[in-house]
Image (cartoon, rainbow, N blue to C red; front, side, top):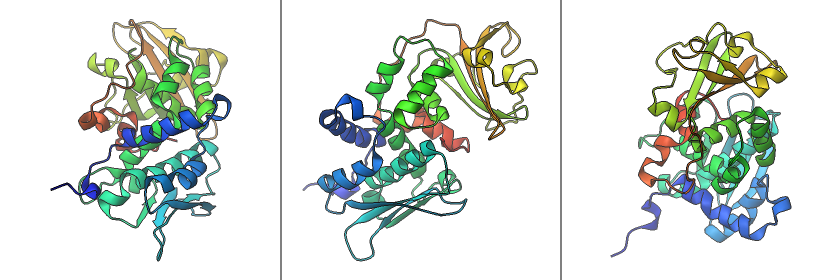
Length: 310
């Protein structure tokens, strides 16, 4: 008496790792990154199932939809569609990987024939109480920025905006996505946040920072950035990028903080990373608990805070 395969719970990180292992084996280093999501979808999914992805197409979808995964009306085939109105390659790349995540993780367990994803959809849970948009984001993050390779880029490196820019360019993702991944890895007490006109949109603490009580409750409260911080000044300067050490009382009472900050005129927002003093290091990327995976993944927290990881 065996169990139905269709009912088996699939974990985003494990599904992403399946593909990562294939790509690591098949591709030489110089063409390994960024991941060609279209190639993965069209060339590898036939080996995973009898209902492969056969098309990845772009088109104008307006402002409400970022991408879709759709099953063919009469064939056992799927297609990914992405919004060409989005002009940032990192966001488009992540959207394609997100839809591939729905294919790998959700198409069988939910028995759906269409997944349509926009900002509103990414904040909603389905009727089964599973946050499938957060799961698809977790898949995308692990596919585009595999743990072993990300660790190789960051291990032994002092945090800097330039290091995060290197990672963003290597993986074809946004600077924010790279910072969120770094916060998942680092053992340093660190906090990432996005602010606009003096107030935080969201913040994300590393595990060690959160455990030491260093976090901002942006979901519950309207949190103002400190008056004398770089974030409040909306700076785009070499000094702000490289980091400025503040004395106690600027960000936290009784504790110094190194603040790295970069202001985007295009969006009118400031991305800030705070690094607090401690021993540092990096966590083991392969040491994760399947049951707790989505509780600790930064992309889950990011979506729950009402933001897309672009």
